Amino acid sequence: MKVPSNQHLIDFVLHEVRLLDDLRFDDWLALFTDDGRYWMPLERGQTERRLHCSLMDEDKLLLKVRIERLHGARTFSQQPGSRCHHLLQQPAIESRDDAVGVYVTRTAFHYVETRRDEQQLYAGWATHTLVGEAGALKIQLKRVDLVNCDAAFGNIQLFM
Image (cartoon, rainbow, N blue to C red):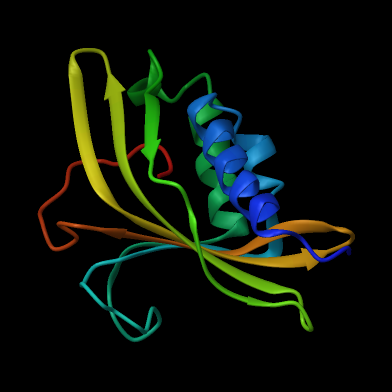
C-alpha cells in the first residue's frame, strides 16, 4: 500500500462516520480488518479490555450480528429504525508508523441517536487504529471513549 498522507487518514475517518450516518452498516463493517474490534471502555483511561468490564467490546462477528439485527424484519425495537448523526472535530493524527503501516487518529465528537420521539446525545473521543491491508486502509480498532462513560445508559442501538 502507498504510504497515506495525513489528509488521507483524516478523509478515511470522515468517510467512516458518513457511512454510519447514512446507515450503510454493511459498507462500514467492510472497513474493518478480519480481527478488527469496536471497543467502548466503561472507565475513563481504561487500558485493558479483557480484564475489565466495557460498555461494548465487539469483534467483527458480533458487529455483523448487530448489523443483521438492525436489518431484521422481526426486530420490532427498530421499527421504525434508529437514526444517527455525528458532529466531529477535525481528526488529529496521534501517531504514524509508515514502516509497518499502522496509523492512529483521535477525533472529538458529539453523537445524536434518535428513534421516534426519543433523542440521546453522547460526547467523547473516537480513536482509530488503522492499518494498511490489501492496498487499502482498514480499521483494526475503533475505541470510543465517552465523556460520561461511567453513567447509566439505556440501549445504544447504533455505532458511534
